Image (cartoon, rainbow, N blue to C red; front, side, top):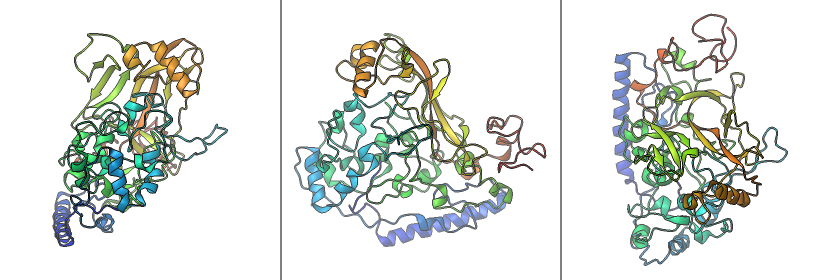
Length: 503
């Protein structure tokens, strides 16, 4: 999880930054010459800070130049008995930071209400109250889930979201390497809070990966394009981070602790996007035929040819097999408390139209147990001018539902009466239903669900971007008919073009 405040950052002095930019300019020149020699290459059409693109506005003008870091060793002498003691010391100098955080999505885990088709009332959704097909839901399971919350003490629904002393500044700003969080977000017992407080600086990839790479129960479980390899990546993992050493906050540029780039897994409207064109021209290619694609094809479609490039990501989770002993010693195949899994690496994305918004399954919505229930299906179609073909990871699962009421139940998993303690599905489902305000009939089974995760990271070098035949060939990776075309639009005149119209 990322965040910035008024704390000066750990960056080089201005003269060193100038030297860095000169070196980067030299690299840009060399790459441009190489491109001219090699010939037309499919160049990234807009992911932030891409330097291979030519004849565009300088993308480096959008890269932040934070002020020099101020060493906090003398400013935060300690000792500190609790995390809140550190926060109180931080707020003495950063007086506005508390109020800013109290209004942030990273703190609230809930977004402002939005109107959805078919819903009588606006829907306020976030991690706090949404169903997923990983660990299923937070309500009643707070002590374990809120290990990743940017706060201290979220143990149940009575947590005070107005108390700024409960904000965890260190989870985003600690650079000591020894700060860790435990149940309900409290600092782990062995943490030296004074050492952590004295180390604070601008958030790094390591800070963000603490939650975003390891959420859902382990490394690479959720996103597919965010895992622990991004902490110290090379160019084969992600060009921007591995070659240019970008930190997350270079793209997710934060103001007043509001971090842009919320995922539609927990938010229905992408109203604070981080876009490739924040830094790059919308038509960056030398070949006009490639530029013609950018209206309807997302940059990521060509420039993220695969995900889970090194570490495996979870693709399948079967809760129905949980509770057995001696099934497998491989945690990538089975855990008694969670069931069976399928992980994989070098996964080819799946492609859908996406306009930046999503529909959402809400607790209490009916389902068809003979089919698949999408939990956050991406909105968009060939007839939607705001939609583009976007790569996705789709996580598929079997999860518990009430066979009489015909809806998913979010069970209680952790703690007293939790499935991870008792291995009793009826008890866990009854308790979870009571906590979430639902009815449980006493009859349950397991039904299929899908969750959709847009892919935005693990951007490959331009030399590894998809070539024309990756999509326009007999064995191309795009299912043209599923996308609404009559077939490959490059095959026969008269078929619908990439722009959605008719030739």
